Image 1 (spheres, rainbow, N blue to C red):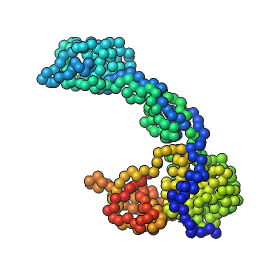
Image 2: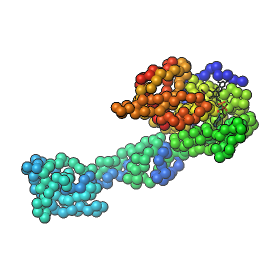
Image 3: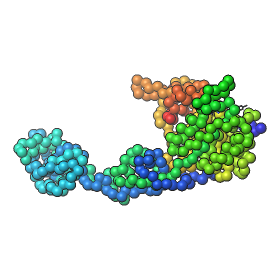
Image 4: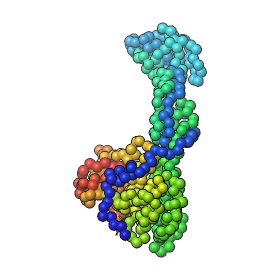
Amino acid sequence: MSEFLDLNTPEMFWEIVDKSLNKGSLPSETINFKESNGRILAEDLFSPIDLPPFSRSTVDGFAVKAEDTFGASESMPIYLNVKGEVFMGQETKVRVEVGEAVKIPTGGMLPEGSNAVVMVEYVDYVGEKMIEINRSVGVGENVVYKGEDIPKGKVLLNKYHKIRPQDVGALAGLGITDVEVYKKPKVAVIATGDELVSPESVPGVSEIRDINSYTIGTTLEEVGAEIRYVGIIPDKFDFLRENIKNNLDCDLILISGGSSVGVKDMTVEVLNSLGEPGVLSQGITIKPGKPTIFAVVEGKPILGLPGHPSSSFIITQVIVKPLVEKIMGIKEKSIKCNIKAKLSRNLDSDKGREEYIPVRLIETAEKNHIAEPIVGESAMISKFVYADGYIKIDANKEGLNKEETVDVYLY
Ligand SMILES: Nc1nc2c(c(=O)[nH]1)N[C@H]1C(S)=C(S)[C@@H](COP(=O)(O)OP(=O)(O)OC[C@H]3O[C@@H](n4cnc5c(N)ncnc54)[C@H](O)[C@@H]3O)O[C@H]1N2
Ligand code: MOO
């Protein structure tokens, strides 16, 4: 039976992964822009047009020559002839000459000859076709010029960019209705354990419902993966072997449970029976999550995750998510410190293991944050349910002090 004497540090683990992973090599497909949120671009996208396609007013007011308004004030208004009106969605034929103004709505097409818009608030009619203006405007004020938002030919988004809602809006505005994206990575999630039953079943005495398939699966769906819930496999060598083989068409296989050193923990043995290279890393200096396994079978990456629900959750956050992002070719780091907070109490930690602790955030009257650690066994999922995020204690530290400022990673 293998023991965890030689754990890999996360750095060593990633070095092993990087050497054996085929990064960013998923096939691509063309999809409609409305389905593109969260997908990874497989092409550099250039703007095919000027946006906006014509110069527009950004306010309700009067299109003018800015120079005509210079020096205007409440005590010294200037007077302009109203030449006509711009209507929404209609081409403007009227031209603004010196001493003239044209009424214009927000978004209306700026008439030729004008270069600024005075807001209605600073204008009074002093005759049917004459206005007085009591505030000057600079050239370009209250105007968005043709192509000022996104000029024709400019790179809008780069290959491997993860498309966000604001990007979808820009695609719509530019009329880019078809986009080439990478196919979603297919991830198979296998739960192992004779004691496990599905969430829909009523557990018998000493049975428990499968939690990990769903924390893992839904986390990775958020990243942009397509999940194949394989289900629960009993702790039997041949069953696990068969199920791994059957899912080698996926881009990644995740096996929850059976990673440790118990008599029924056979993940390592099964993986090594499936051909070279098999298990490349067994055990990692992360707490919780020590038994994490990385293997390659028929060129496909496979991770063995610890069975304890909290351990499985944190390893999904700090190992599986980044690994899936590597497969997808995503460049941006998804694990970001979202907030700084002061720790509510001292925390001990084992030197030599990077430790992750769930925290609840409390906002102070001064709008600062206090991070309150939630302690409990790795066997408990509730720690992370009641938490807003987690903090990390570096491997070279023996703990953190009360009042110390910590980085909180929200999820
Ligand atoms: N003698 C030792 N015992 C253990 C060690 C060790 O180093 N020496 N490591 C402990 C740590 S740390 C962890 S984490 C667990 C990991 O064990 P396994 O990955 O082998 O997982 P199992 O034994 O199959 O299960 C552990 C625990 O988790 C429950 N479980 C498993 N799968 C699920 C699931 N899908 N949903 C909900 N709960 C699940 C399972 O019932 C067990 O209670 O090993 C420690 N032991
Ligand atoms: O590694 Mo275990 O995952 O510490 O709880």
